[in-house]
Image (cartoon, rainbow, N blue to C red):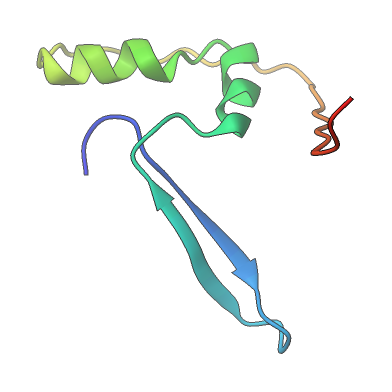
Length: 71
């Protein structure tokens, strides 16, 4: 696959990893890498245009808290 995509694994009741989802979109947690300086949307455009790019990652400590409860 090329462009924006992600996959998600979950453990079943026996602790075995199972494929939960494959999506051809920006996942919600990709924002974690955006903070580190990686813009996946821009990279997907560069990939489509066949540009040769180098990704420079900000090596900073970050944390993420998500809530699926409407507020």
